[in-house]
Length: 410
Image (tube, rainbow, N blue to C red; front, side, top):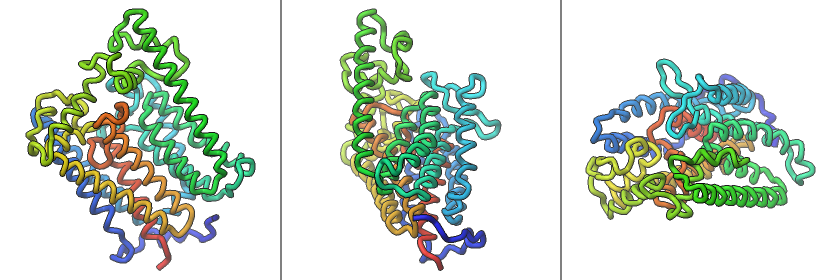
């Protein structure tokens, strides 16, 4: 379906009324955001660090972004998608330049330091850019058989592949892997031939096999040369064609073959997270009373961001955990409902893409805290600490609100 209606600039800021505003998502998101502030405070309670105040500032800015985006007619993004995409590519290139991109943690160069604002993570803007680019390409295209759609698929492969490769080069596999399901979901509802998905599944299985072989070779190489997985992991990098780092291979090994990795090293976060979740019981130990984060067993560098769910599970137990999961469930269900109510293909694709992206974040983050998937640096929306991530989440959810508000003309 092509968009044939002209965009009326005066309609971008129509007055919000009870009939035109969806209260389900913002209510749930506000509760989740408050969960985040309280438990960021709790995770850092023992070290008297105040990232929770910074989170409040980011949430305030995010609220402005959310309201502004929801008041704008989402069709505006179809016309100006390139104004988001091109800067995103530029920032991804800049972050790879030594001296410009900032290195944190395991040697990954993922941030740009902006004076007065702090660290900016370009991969978050890239997720938004890929969403806009994919929706824009698919909205104006007819998709049927793979042969008929080849030109569209090539264009889409370039639009999605370039930012994904740049993100992988940082490296930030978590963000890159979060983008792929979003794009495939948008392709799936665009009437693309099932043969494409069968082929994509085959390629995915092949890639998984190649990665598995690479990690097996890595493990054998380390054992054969009597090298320490934690200290000497970079020694294998020159022997592999894959853009993986030693710590990434260690994470997979710690999940699949924990006996291969020192549990006091790379497997520490995962084990302490399991202890945190398991020790919470039904109602938890109480706010700020969690011992794992307080005593530093759950590392303080990750307790308030990637492993914030572990803190919630320990201090509020099963009831607190299921409350958080339930709130996310309502947000995701409502996102699909709004996608089904959209006035056109563009609105449906945007709402669906946002919902699938959030689903990946929620599932992977919670699953890694309970040992279902390897540890990845994927934060929990609206709860984990992070400025750029908060703003991107607010913008994306604002888009969903816009799709609801402009689902029909008034």
